[in-house]
Image 1: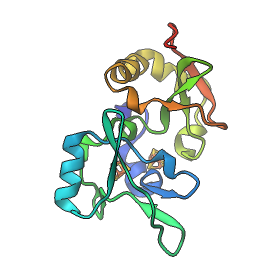
Image 2: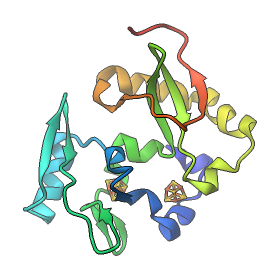
Image 3: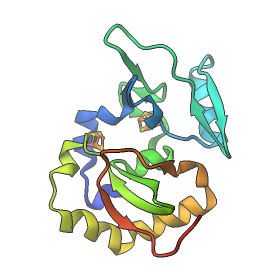
Image 4: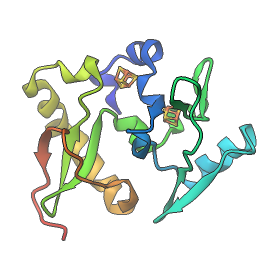
Amino acid sequence: MLKKILDPKCCAKCRFCCVFDRYDAWETPVFTEEQRDRIRAFKPDTPFAVKDGGFILRVSEFDENGLFTCPALTETGCMLGDDKPFDCRIWPYRIMYVGGRRAIVIASNCEEMFNRPLAELVGFLKNGAADEIFAYADLHPEIVKPYYEGFPVLLFEQKSRL
Ligand code: SF4
Ligand code: SF4
């Protein structure tokens, strides 16, 4: 979804958002059943937990550097390709509940996007991306996270959800 604003070549070099530490392990994506099955076919021992209508990774073991790498990450990128989780397709945008309303926020740890002008980040949302994100969240409310401190809010949904 972000190809118009974020060059996939940047992500191929970076891969930052496929690796987690114990402080951002809550950020691992929510998978659909089909995505879970594809990962399990690739790595059968991958532990998942059910979250609302989706599946999340059980993150319990970290490597010697204190990091957990998403099991879908391969040498050539995400094994799920264009069918990666919605969370991953919109990162570093996130959707969260802020004061009872859904809002689109941005993660500060994507330097490539976070340093863009606000008008560019919000403009991209207003040009259709926000509608797509809210529409997906209507069908998959499990992707909406409680507000987490430090994520600047870019755009509120117009109608109240709670
Ligand atoms: S942190 Fe940003 S640039 Fe890096 S892989 Fe994630 S979205 Fe791409
Ligand atoms: S599902 Fe793919 S894009 Fe998402 S965190 Fe895992 S490897 Fe990265």
